[in-house]
Image 1 (cartoon, rainbow, N blue to C red):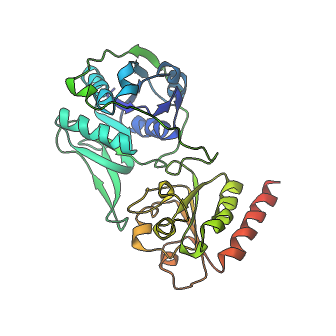
Image 2: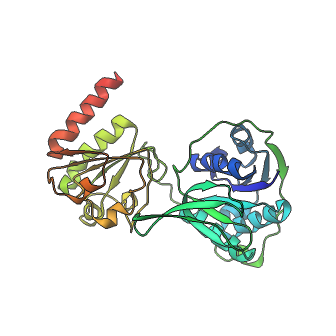
Image 3: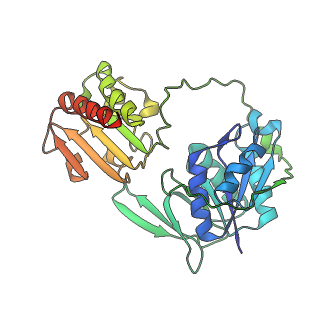
Length: 320
């Protein structure tokens, strides 16, 4: 059966959820072969095997931590040459898309980014994308070479499908470009205890209607009751009420959670572009004519300062 390369996103052996989603999609196309690099690579094997990886190619070297991107591209190309896959799947993070693009150039193949679904086709994998600020959905396939496809988080379920997960060492020869950009310092991201925004199953966002940085505590309280990530509109970020790293929209992050709750957000096209593919959308806004209501599954016309705290209390009471 044809093999599909899956690039593993992990932290010291802990596999991140988007990779497990890629394994679900890879099984539609063939047998998943995972590529895990860096410290803790071998520790990923059990989790990857549990979710369908028939083989796990691992490599560790100082270059993966000390230099940017290129050593990982060298390794993924080595895996590509060893496996001759029918497709290469990579998580749609900023780093993932750069790795995928560089690999596509090297192997002279087409690339599709930010896919939200994959299916097998007679002439190769067919990818679904949400394009033009989520106004259209398209289906595409690569016309030249082996498809290199990045997939947005929350595009597929995480499904257990036990497989062999045989661990094999991957021999990697680093190119001259591998040591071109050195990492000189790292600063750990301050932990909020909340899920990563782009990977969260639930996102609660606040906008201009929150009316101040101090009032984002209301948004955070609802998010924490739901185990959700916190997002913000561009208006709230530009006003300095919330960090840019939490901005959802065309110039921020694109999210596709199971549930998206927008509070005090009008629903301008810039914001919609970053969250329109959410599975269920709920909006709270006191303006009944706000554009966000054209998009939602459920809308509440009301003052967020009254509605959101009541919703938070209701969630807490139901959770006991």
